[in-house]
Length: 373
Image (cartoon, rainbow, N blue to C red):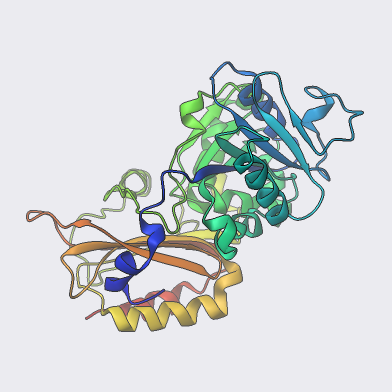
């Protein structure tokens, strides 16, 4: 994370070129409905030309139903203008190959959807878009969509870390098969997911019937892009917890950071026995950060805990600038940008959310406290 005030000026990616190709990662555990959703996206008459990259080790292949499965071609053009290809090498090579064919006029597509296998960790897939200059200059990672099977999710989340990671990485969660369980079970699952990842909106999806506007151009994942930040991006979560736990987050406390860790101190009997290793917590302060101290601390933290840090994001009040500083990251990759100015009547409050696997909350909280000016 370069010194914060310089980042926006120095980083050309803060204003992404209009020619960047948006990419969406579609993830979810085995049987959650990824392929059903993808088929709908591919066959709907939305007029968009989409390139789909799917991992051929997946348990379900879209070409079984949509494509001619005997073909040996790596890239297949569908009748509605969509393109499908299977990863035979690594993702970076496949993306570069698609981009080259597009530049030469051999393929025509406007966006990319990557369907991961049900057992995949989305982290390395997301990192591909930031670790390679050629890919970063061609594609813009728009969002990570995670499908969660309402009928089997609790068992999967209890036993499979891949399923928990997929939830932790999500920018948008789609709950599938909610018609197969009762309303109380859906509510309990939704509550559990919220504890794991409070920043991802949840919506129900029935047999893949999702409006295209809920799938594309969500701008959920803008590691380097100029972020359009909602200053209340945690407000919905605060409301839920104030309402559900009887906590009042609006009044003065002895400490600036007073949120309980999601997953702890929870009175709900249906949730109490789930001790998920993927948890989230929030840091808040009305005191500004010292930019140099914060940069050093976060740099050290990602070196040590980066592999366990799934997603983290913040709107920061930084000493020395009258603008909001926006930062977010995945694993060891972290980016920051200058956002809009604080408006005169607005309370300057730094808000940070961390989602990770067994993160040391006390160390992070104390360290962030020590970075305040």
